[in-house]
Image 1 (tube, rainbow, N blue to C red):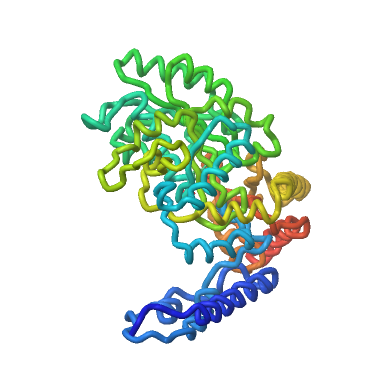
Image 2 (spheres, protein in one colour; image 1 turned 90 degrees about the vertical axis):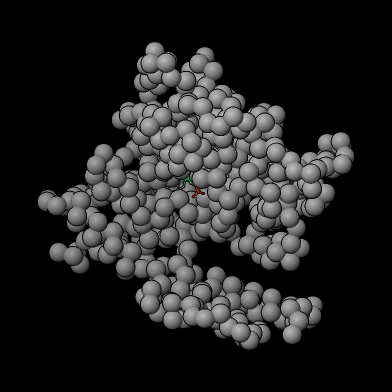
Length: 462
Ligand SMILES: Cc1ncc(COP(=O)(O)O)c(C=O)c1O
């Protein structure tokens, strides 16, 4: 019993899997978004004991069950901040896995490392941060963790003698991954100051200055500020230039969490003034560059700072060349050693479509959000709960009483109907329905469908 399969068998299998994927794409628009399946049914279908004998290419029939139990990402899937999975890039994933390159360093994956360094420089250039380098990550959460690890090592070094105390500042709208990173780095969540925001959910620079002064007066050590370039709830962009002024003056590391929004700097750079003054920036090509998960990225300005944080080279990974290209090692600049060839997906997708097509898709998403905002404002039964800064629209039905509970039930009803998928946010304590346009498939008709479905589900519930 050999694990090897012939090239012909592989081709046959890959063609059947490609057909399954293509059938899924063909049916996207007509399928209900949420699969009509129970947890128990999926366990029955996909769980069970590990088979002791293989079924060969009939595994494709089992994969059909995986497809049927999956959420469908058509143009009306507008939940969370979830990129739409661009298929040309996805097709390249098969090749990436067959090549099985381990992107530890150039010498392990010469082409792979070259491709990753290329796409990282494309991303940096595209958002006006051409002087930055970095690496792809599993997502925004790992990029934020790595950015804050660099901040700690730069301002309160802990790698050798263990954690020193340090205070980190962010707004109350910061993503939960910031609190998680602060906790994991041993800084302590009590040392994360979550500052209240203005009417547009942006950090107030004056409050930041005051908080730093208070902490210094109390004998504490401020080390970093995390600015959001697109908060997860409403897409608010903190005043990056004013925050950069303060960070420079106070010698704080400036990390920008752009996991949701920073890629919009490709089309509305004026909204992100000051971004290039950050020390580190996280962004997610698997969000607003439409790539399949996972494809996050951490950019940083100072490679030496990355080395000081992450370099701990064991003998077996030592590089034997000083050549700046061939001696390059991601593991000196990242928390990962073994790394998958994520970059091939993005590189293929960008070569296939060209950057202008991505800019067009981003512009379309921004205009879809504005159009939904206009529809909500024009509909007496609905109300907008937050300004539309990027592509997230938070709104709700005006129920005369029990508005939170009834909107919560309304969200469940909308998603159950299967035509549109929304998620939720809490806006100043109120339960909001939230549509987030980071989807290259969304059309104007899909935007109308959001309002139609919300009103239809509300009528059904009364
Ligand atoms: C602003 C922001 N930061 C960080 C993250 C975490 O990114 P990931 O899910 O890729 O870990 C998200 C996810 O939605 C986000 O919106």
